[in-house]
Length: 223
Length: 219
Figure 1: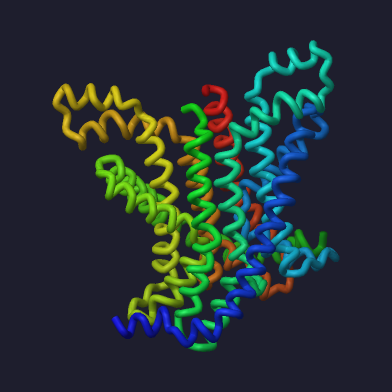
Figure 2: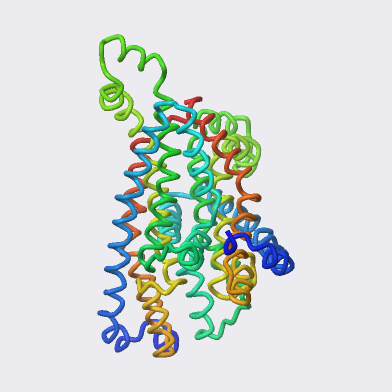
């Protein structure tokens, strides 16, 4: 037991490296926030464009969405970081992870939002039009409020899953929480830093997962 | 163009990529059935359990869902040896990913089981069925059909998450692509690997979209 504690929760290691892991945690939170804001916004805009219903605009959106739903995020990150510089697009580690996960979240959000806006039936659109509302007014006052209720549960769980992938930044050397922990671990030859990172991720994500469960129960899609 | 679709490099990388694809398939063959099995078992335990068991299981499921799978993998692969448990890359990846994804499968089955009307269960009980046969004959078959879209979605996520194995140098598809990329100084293998993932998963994503839409409009 003592041996176990020495290897996984050694007090002196915790005290010494808490600031280091804390810096990583800060980066993880910043990156995650940036992804959520940009990804959801882009997803909403794309879903809106797709609602207009022009074939010319829809086809690229559908291809984009499918592409990012089918590709493993790590593959996208690796391509953005290692392959894009060769065609003159140089991204920082932060930029590569941010862009990859933002596009991924946008793809999932578009799909969820568009599907739920489609469910708000044609008749409600017609009712809105016949009472003289514009396209944007119908969206704003009729479609989006209903669609949001329907999509909030899948959207939250998808957002959490995507933000968890910020840990993938460690693979290209982004000094977020996991990368810093792994680095310290190999320096001190002790697993404590990894335990700290795991606890750090729990601190960030456990409340979110519980929150998502609450939302899911509250706005359950009628099954 | 020279860089991204270099035919010579592509030709060179094919044997590597195929070997990688084989490992990816092997990982899927281990992880998907195990994940579904463990998830189903946890959900069954939850379904049959009392308040205490349910509380514990929910906390465990949510803890497992809160950790990024890569964190679990690094922990299992680099941490457990300090406890004297040394796993090969293949089993470390399998253990970490099964731990992670079985919690998602468990949650999917759990919510599916919970949605079966209690009237049906009471009727079955009144006709003398045991809990096990109620679960096996009444609850599970209907629930599985209801949550099919989520199951397919999660399984696609599992296939994608096998690419994490490259982080511990298990020679699966992404790892192999990066190896050839390193040898040739050319990103074509990465693009080829991405194309292979697309060929495998694009049809699945299309099917999933259809299932999801059907589920939403049938509400």
